[in-house]
Length: 280
Image (tube, rainbow, N blue to C red):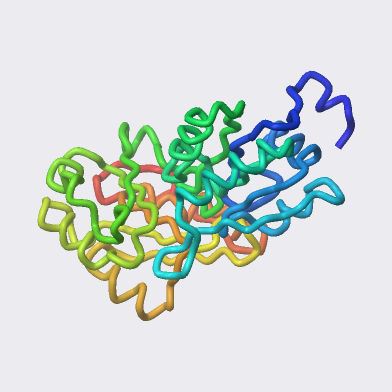
């Protein structure tokens, strides 16, 4: 990339930290500011979900330090990761903390930033494209469509203890949000589906699982709320995956642009379960 594209952007200074979102996978979805940070950083402290193709954009000679956290697998404690950023900055390093998606959307970026504030470390937040929007777009599923929904809810499928969050009002979400996008929900999809059906959602409502979104390994499973748990087991769906519940899933038969590039014939229109005619 030419220097002109970076000329008006801020510089990653020694002794400071940039908390950067890498987006859902495709390095082409990095922001200009993220790319500039990678080109300037002395050390890149990265998550497990950051695509290796993004890491290849780091400055030659920059150190790459893994600090991933994956549910059910050995990983560093969050407090230790945050304090590591402090340590590196105090040593005069230009530190880039690279996180999958957006650092402030279920990414613990807020926790890390608060630790930097606590220790008087200068920092910058560089938002990224969150998987709940960008990952679904790569599957041909819009989170909103004016003929289908005027609201969308984003939620996490487990809390800090690894169980389905008690604080989520499933009844209210089930009744009030036509589209629900879920992060980290694979492990508890059976319970989550049961919660939503108990809240009044139809077992026949469409659901999609997008695994390894916006990467060469992307897989998409379309099923229904009632069959979600069995379908996940049958197809061997594993994290990382984003889950979307709602009629927007039906739009994929018309908007699967990646599939079209590979030869899939897209459908011009279809009837949604709500009785509206929308692209399908």
